Amino acid sequence: LLSFNGGYECKCPHLFKLDPKDNATCLEHRVALLMSRQTEIRGIDLDEPEKNFIPSITVSKVQNASVVDYDGREGFVYWTDLIQGVINRAFVNGSGVTPIIDSDIPNPYGFAIDWVGRNMFFSSFKEVLNEAAAPKSSVDIGADSSTSDKEATTASPVPTKKPVMFTYVDAKIQVAKLDGAFRVTVVDSNLVKPMSVVVHPFKGKLFWSDHGNDDDRDFKIEASDMDGGHR
Image (cartoon, rainbow, N blue to C red; front, top):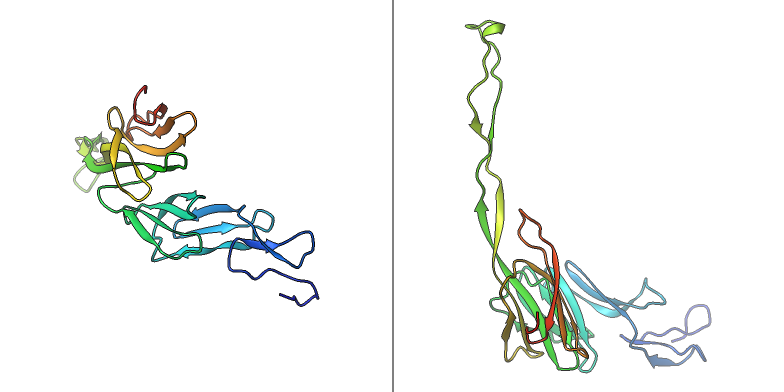
């Protein structure tokens, strides 16, 4: 389209930009930064980051996006949603939002696409409220009308408010086909709070981080084969 300054600008809906050779022709351009905020998934042009290069996917389709990934072969955007407890996908133009996995996937912080094997890996864990033992504290009781300053005493220890902590259970890393079929658990032992997942398809490796329990914060990064072996 002819712009106000006599030049041309691309007004194509997504993934197109002006050909730098003539600044008049729109060419398909599939280099973009795909990013997520809590209630929005968007793609921006690396050369002009102020512009939305891909139409934003927002509420109610996105309530709390945690991880976003892209399958270049089929042109789908995938993301996990912490509030909905699902893995969704949509076309890169934001249409066709479809839940791929929508059951038994609490806290899906980790997600990665194996673009070679056409699989997706994802983590989950459950939070259980756990009341820790209440610490004791002492409080000073000042003098009242019936006591002198010297007779002011210290009261017996009284319980303070119990801190509430989480215990994490049923942690696992699973794999499924990109349409959600053939869902299988590959790691579920010695796992507490998996928070991220990465794959290296050419080497057949799976990597993940484990943040451990809140009381010990035993952070780890582990690796295994993509079937969970050779951990």
